[in-house]
Image 1 (spheres, rainbow, N blue to C red):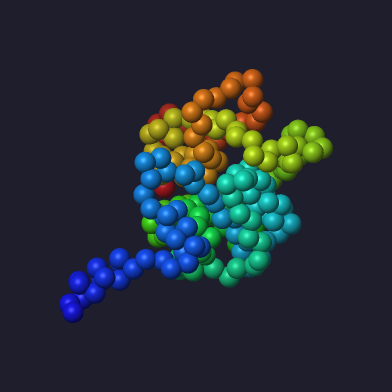
Image 2 (tube, rainbow, N blue to C red):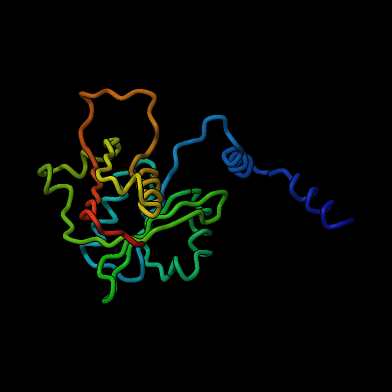
Length: 207
C-alpha cells in the first residue's frame, strides 16, 4: 500500500468511544463557528501583580477561558510546540502567557492558533497595573465575570500601521469574546479602551 493510500485509510478511522466521537464532532467545520476560547498560562516566574493580572484576563473572558496556573517553563518565541500541544489538549485557539524576569518584569504574550498550529503572537509589557476592583469598587471583579465589554480602539495608528493593525486584530479576538447578534445599550456595563498616541507631525514610526 502506498503512502498516500495509507494516509487516506488512517484519516478515515472513526472514534470508537463516545468521548472520542464527541471530540471529532466538535472539531468538524461549522457553518457558524463556536466562540473562541482562551487558555491563560502562568510562566515559570510571575510577580504578584502579574499573577493577579493573569487572573483578571481569565475573568474578562470567562466562561470562554481556562486558567492554568501551574508554572510553565515554555518560551513561546523560542519554541511554540509545547504551547501548541497544551492549547490543543484543552481545545483552545487563543492563549495569554504571562511571566516576570529582571529584564521583563511584566511580560504578556497573546497568541492565536489555527487548526492546532500557531498563527501569530505578540508581546506586550504591563506597566502601572491596577486591578479592576480599583475602578469599580469592592466586588467589581466578580461582577465582570461573563460580562461582554465594549472594546474601543483610539488612534490613527491602529488603521495606518501594519504592526498595530495586527495588534488590533489580536486584541479584539481576545477581549471581544463572542459576537452577539444584538447589543442592548442599557446593558453595557464596562468598556476596554486601547489607545495609541499619534506621532508628532514630521516624524516616522518604526516597528
